[in-house]
Image (cartoon, rainbow, N blue to C red; front, side, top):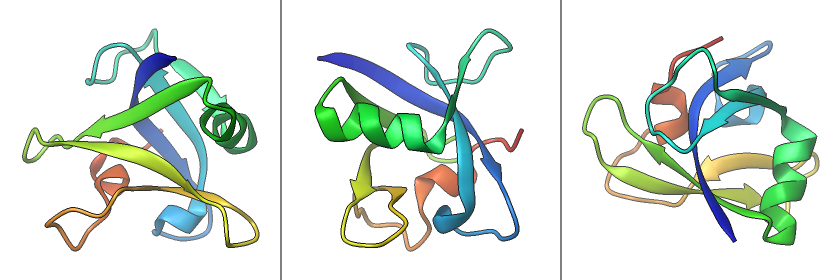
Length: 96
């Protein structure tokens, strides 16, 4: 199983993890112009099938959190596994 970092996000019509429509991924936890852009349905497929494990490194705290799919909701969306922060780490990433 490959490991990747989500390094940036695109939001539409809102400011919660439910509004993420695209993510950028890399083997490096910090965004660069060469990162792969992945539409949300494809990222959900990759995570759900076990093709990748995805993580986020918070730009603020440098802590790493695992990205997971919330499968019970429709439509499905991404979030980080619960940690000590009330905010989702994905929302701390740069917006593209």
